Length: 378
Image 1: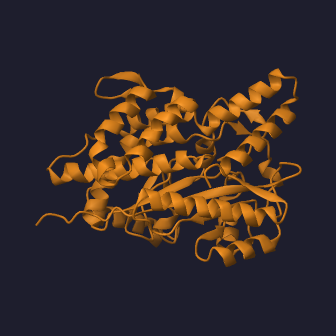
Image 2: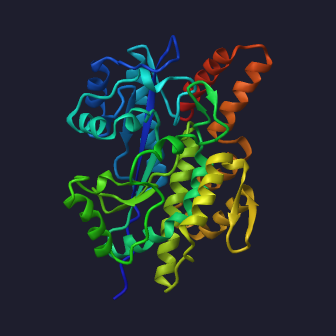
Image 3: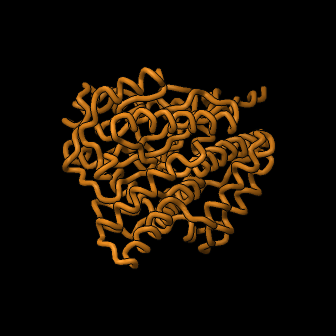
């Protein structure tokens, strides 16, 4: 019997940094009233993060990209409105340009206290934010099958999202330094390959039975079967400062999931490549972002992202038409032209230095740019 087509509904989660509007530094101790007011205005759509200078939002289940865009814009705007009442602003970015992780405090909740106890300085350094996109695939066997094929595309999505070129006031030389910080945690990076849902469950259960983790939500791979929903959760990407960039990546990921389903429906599948090779593309995306190259394993050569994006858009065109989101996915080309948030941050910094600003003054200009871009289109 053929597997029914999944619903492919989607949800987007984003983590933001809260800054003081005067100093542009992080609000290491934001007032409790801020979170209370956010929760009152956005019940079940907002939550604290590990660090008190962070806040996380999650859209409701969305049936279209247009709906996801509307919901994400509403959430960004509401967080900004509430934060503004306290002299703060949210930044949709994966690292703050000059903040110091040693000056931050973690949220006083049981789960975060336990995380701080067990992970020690590794988690204390976790001054990073990410964007996660859920796409529903209700059949468990199909979900694991598609999950096994998604890793190939993760570097492409990462390259389009990069927003973390600075760390503690320094240019890192990477477009996504966030992943270098995140990889210090266990159970991160590219996922394993599983032959069946049973094998996946047995593997997770080994850690549960050993008392190492409580459940699958403590497995933080770049993509994972969600531990709470019948979805495939993509976690590799940085937070996109511009709303339209975030929506383009969410739409592209959703189309890739459906494309892999179409292959399965036709008794085909995406070719399996070694984790070693995909790790190299992941590094290239992290290092160079949208203006670099990735390796085309079939051709055996490095290919510019522009060419790879054109090929990817053609590959998922049928799916973009099915979801009525052709314009959203084709916005990926605009990202290549305008650059990612990381590219724009570096350009702002370098322009300010050329005009005679000190490094700190230049970084403040970067923060001002991020604050403005977070709300474009909201």
